[in-house]
Image (cartoon, rainbow, N blue to C red):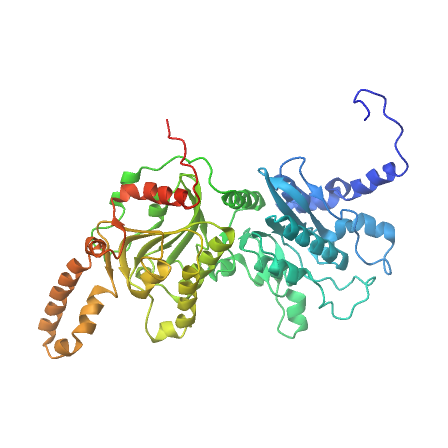
Length: 511
């Protein structure tokens, strides 16, 4: 080995060419393109990856690949203008955690998917599979590229990328900014979670394909804008810009690292005052979630989609946890078809990512009626029940206020005994259905024979009687639930239970 202070030998043959070619793959080799991109408030593919990964840890794959267009363009032109064939990728560490990272490069042929680029992504996805690495993919681009004539093909339907990426059984995160259409959109859609910037447009086809299919002329901005794709559940997190997107990716990857040091704890006694005295009054459940989680650890998911159900990733005493909660400010917290889809997707995510689940229950049950059934409620609701029943990660249930019917069971994995621990707060009530509905159903014939005033008075009196019977303390007395607790105790009880699942050590006491 040559000592650092000894005179270096002359560069080996080819090293000068290597360094020159390597330079041509960098942003410094295309200053005008980069300047125009920056003027639009955007960062390049390499800038996003550099912001994400730990310095000095990026091992790049296929940097010297060029577009397969030598039959129609000079090789020198391809080397200069199609660096890496528009896909930058490799392995790296993110906050010390090994990952696979990839980004289409919109400054190279609009981020389209080239034939050699496909070979690179196939290689990188297979590497992620073999090394069991989480994968982060910046997916901006226009889909398949028709101009790669060097590789003979007819349909290109034998490409492996979509099968490989779809089957990849590691955590997958996609970042969408700018225009993301066709094959690029499928890559984003097959990820576990999708983060988007406000300028994103996400669609299964771009303007050219739509026009070519005789379906009309549309500007790119009209196809799958963020407002629509967040409302329909396609997008999980919407951020201000690419810098915030990278920060959210870091946060998501952090949940995968498992338990860490407990974060600052909120004042647990504040939980006692968050529920209204009138249990028919809606309240925002998000402060409850924040009151259980370590401070500044909450990441809300799909906020605009099915707002009657809240989903979030948090930490509780340093433990990564997925939280699902009914939101009574929307449809009284009833579980709709969309909420069932949202809940099932989230439970399946927690199962894949091996993140424990805490379910906060305050629901009158599934939304019912002809309109609800027209949305496919039976199919979607049953999927949520199945997702909960199949959980192998720890589940803890907390009935905050109303735990009624099949909806409550769905929130608890199918049964109050399915969670490892099922708690209730003092004012909670549990029942096979809403209390007033139970009265009206059980005594339908008798009530029908009464005058209206007497009927409604009887319903009110019997509902009050049912209410007393349905108290959480009575459910606990018959061991339908495990305990009724002071809300201020909830955080500690959740943490103690989760830490015992795999024999995890208790955290050091705070000083």
